[in-house]
Image (cartoon, rainbow, N blue to C red; front, side, top):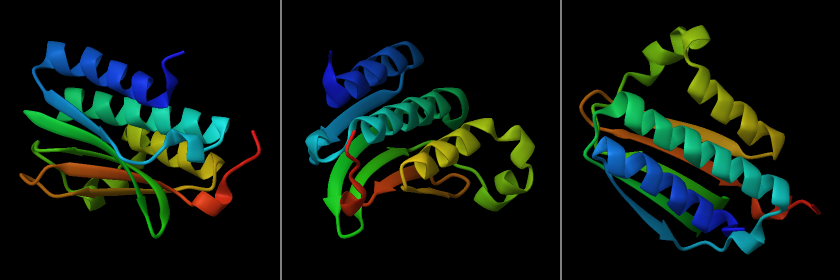
Length: 137
């Protein structure tokens, strides 16, 4: 009922306020460009990414952004937290359920999932959905 943007904003409010993380949302790309299954994946990835911010980042600020880029429709969740060594986390994949969940969700709709992070530099995740891959759902 809230639509994709409303559901993401609701998640940000429920995670941000109790955890003390100031989460801002900037929705520049229309959710109408995505099919129903794609929107569901975007919501689930946003929810998981924000839970990771709350649980692991020690961040004070985070942003949720949607935009259109050459590659397609992009969801970006970034924080100013402690970051992590992406290579070291990938090496112990069995303990990395959240990132694995987001990657699997992305693959369901033909999207690309990227994680950029460094210790003491925060973390950014991106879900890139090719606009030409819009489904007929």
